[in-house]
Image (cartoon, rainbow over all chains, first blue to last red; front, side, top):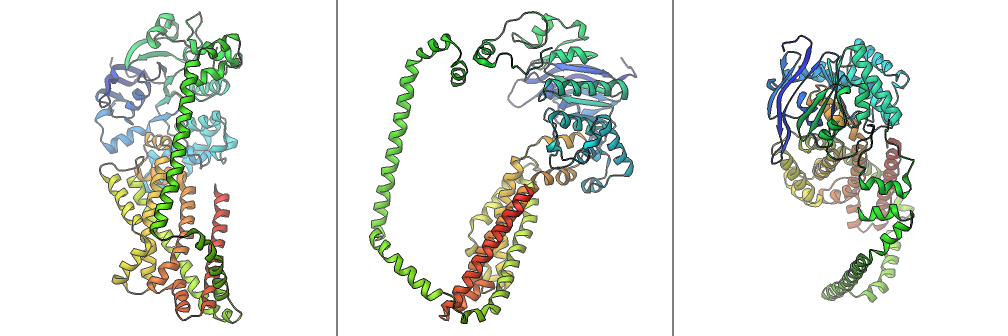
Length: 283
Length: 289
């Protein structure tokens, strides 16, 4: 398996929170350069924990994470900072500094490359500023560079988030529920942007998703997590009713063909007059 | 959950109404709940009046004579403390003292804010450096805040004598305690998402504080500092009386030499400055929010 193409190799990753059951239980998976891998699973299945164990926003309990030939779990503070330069992350709630403009938020992605003082004072080089404008243009927000981010729409905010991730010139992008707070149209724009990042820029994407329909449409490979364990891995074609059942248990999933048991609470809400106004992303 | 379900199904159909009649048992429980609340409220009101009566009788507080005496007291005050044309000539001794009091208030608030912010960042739950720092910072803030400014002034008077600096220091110490507490709350309530994002990008602690924490809480910090300046101008008068400096001292001197008209003028200038300061800070607050 010593494949040059493998960018990220996770083996036996386990995370125990104090007193709780294992959030991650012996998870192994790998991501090739430029590959688009989606992780699906119910809330609390350990998807977010998995992503955060890769760049060590959360310290894994045991297991190994090899990124671009380096063992992440053994790195000291300084080396960890260096490694994080090439791993960028985007978030469900965008996590922008709303009082600042789009371009300032994008340039935050360069902080990992800069000395503490230069970064704190916001002394970015000409090249960095040019790069920041280029990536803002790539996500279609060139005209919004000087706009404060609290004035942007949800979809635009997330695209600023993507621009901030791109300005890091990463090899890997970790995307934690990137479209969970967005309407269907913005969701599609964001997913298309991410797919474009993988195809055109060759940046691998590891994406947590709730929406199985989007996962099926955009991924090269899908990984299913349930209760901290990997219960499925395969191409979108291999995902069927049974796989969904294993990953999610007995709940209704939007966007899959075929009839399923619909939970009673959903029926009650529809009967109450909400019928036809559902804004969820049904394919 | 139950309440939400009922609300949603309410207008729906006959099915919903059968559901409603099925809740007679819970209706009785609801009535009992509200009856109990009314009784508790009634007991509280009666208790309030009883305590009032007992404690009033204990300190010889007579409501009727108090009401009768107040107008006479106010009339005396108005007559004695009414500034006269003559007292206006003393303005040149009042205004410099007023100026130094304002400056002492602004300086003590702003310098306290710098120290308070550093301490608050280190002690906050979201940006803290961990370990026992959080508890230590909270303890420090609590000590400085809970010792009244009057007590500080009297204690510091021994060490620093009768000087402007003593007054400044007394204001600084209470402001420092108060602002530390306010900034701690502000930073604690801040969303942690952007901090996480910058950490993920490899930013250092100092970079995160300057590029993320400061921009996110700058408006409420400014707002608190403005409030502190207002409060300090008011308190500076009292501190001035105790430490023999600033506008408080001027008031004290004229008051003790029976020049009530000039003392009254001094009070008027203080009130005007406080109102002006409040108006200005309200304006600034509206602009930056």
